Image (tube, rainbow, N blue to C red; front, top):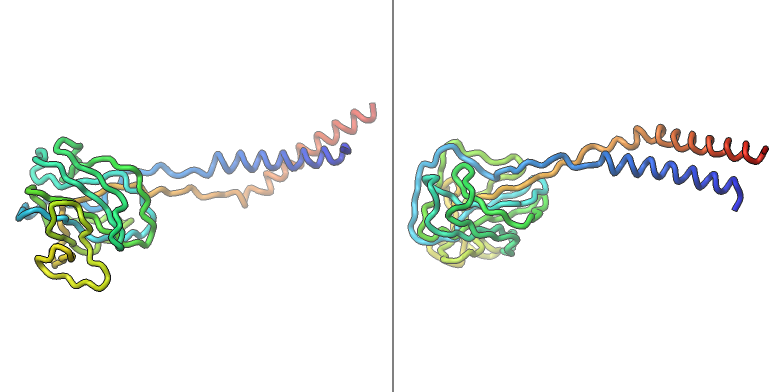
Length: 235
C-alpha cells in the first residue's frame, strides 16, 4: 500500500472520529420530567354506586412514555382497596396495566404505582380506566387542567368488577346500563384513574454548521502526517 493511500485513509479516519465524537457527545435527550395527564385543585363530588371500569378518552399530541398509573384518593388519607388501572388503544387492546395499592405514593389527589415504560405514539386515541370497587371517584372538579402534550376527550365507563375496555367499538351505540358498551355523559371526566408520563425532547443537532470546521481539523491532521512522512523520506 502506498504512502499516499495511507495518508488518505488517515484523513478519512480523522474526520470520522471527530464527527462521531461530536455527534455522540452532543445529541442527547433533554432531561425529561415526570408529567401528570390531568390535575385539579378541588374535588366537588365524591361518589360511589357500585363497581365500574371507569375513566376517560384522550389523544396524544406528541409521543409520550407512560411510567405510572394512579387512582383517586378522595380524602388523601389512604385507599381501602387495591385498584387495577390500565390504558387501552381505541381498538380495545390493553397496552399497559398496573395495580394501585392503598399505601402507594400520593401526588395531589392520586396514588401512583410504577409500570414498565410504555410508548404512546403521537396522534393516537387512547382510553384510561380503573376498577373502582366500592371506593369513591369524582367528576366535575374545580381547577381542572390537562397537560399540553395530550387532549382530553370524554368520560367513559362500564359496569364491571374487573378492568375492561371502557370505550365503544365501531358499530356500537352507547346505552346506559349495558355492561358491554361505553357510556359517556356531559360530566367532566371520571377520576378514577390518572397517569404520569415523560415526553423526551432531543437537543438540536448543529452538525451542518460545524462541518467545515470538522473537515478543517481532519485536513490539518492529514497535512501534518504528510509533512512528517516527507521529512522521513528525505532522510
